[in-house]
Image (cartoon, rainbow, N blue to C red; front, top):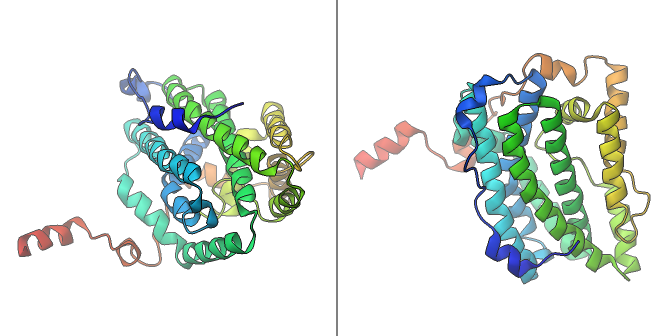
Length: 308
């Protein structure tokens, strides 16, 4: 694989949805598992701006190539979440996208601030933080596009398959950047390889964990990957990441699946109960979104305009 940041900057754009048959969304059924995964994926795509805020306080922000990539990456990810939300709305699930995003963020509470501080401190303490971040980026992008591929296969929904197929093309470019950048940083740098391996084995978690609970993460993994094809996809994913210098033989996504299976074995309803009970709604935050986001309700905003 190769990656040209100049070409990427020139070609980066809003997701092209021309020709998607939005009007046919309701003509094909989606299972409870499909809907659970779509809500999960939408929430995590919409979480990208907060993840970006964590990166921009680290030493990684000193690299102009990385910040150029992040600027384009953030914009592209925005439209992934927007279009998944649009499909769900057209399918008949009503929610206000901005309210949902605000509620997800409000539920994070103090966790988000502590995460930013710890990431910032760690990055300036460890010179090779960028190697860890780039490796995690490669893993997360590859697992995301693998998850989309699994959902296309599971759902058999033609409109969803068309949409996710287009998103996967973006995710492949993102993976190419992270993988090649991580490879460049790690090649010939044994210290960075040791730090990277140590951190991934101890710190890495599947995409969405932290925003989502362990059971929600497991529910997604069990629905998408708990069959022969899904397990093979995750083993192949680990093998690809293992091609990075210092990461040979590493097991991350397959290990996460096996751990989810163990928890489900101890409690047969684990994960699946969330799917069966249609647990894709966001629980009301303990504090109102406005307290944390400064976002005002429509009534408050209208009153402010009248006063002005």
